[in-house]
Length: 82
Image (cartoon, rainbow, N blue to C red):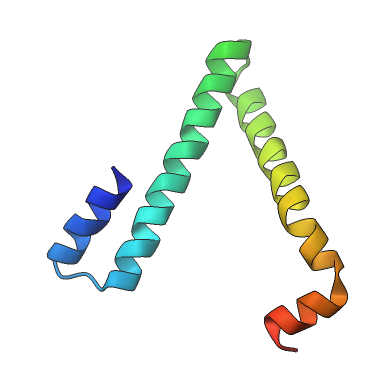
C-alpha cells in the first residue's frame, strides 16, 4: 500500500526522496496505529493506557536496536564521522 502511495506521489510530480519519506511515514503511522488498536482491543485497555504501552514498547525496541551501536563509541564516531 505504501509503495503504491509513493508511486502515486512520484507520478504527481513529487521528488523521489520526498515520496520515499512520505511512504515510510505512512507505513510507520499505520504500524503504530495497528499496534495501538491490537493492544487496546486485545487487552481491553483504555485509549491512554494503550498509547502509553505502545510508546513504551516502541522505546524499548528502539533502545535494544540502536543501543549497542550508540554505546560503542568507536563505531559511533566512525558512523557519524566526528
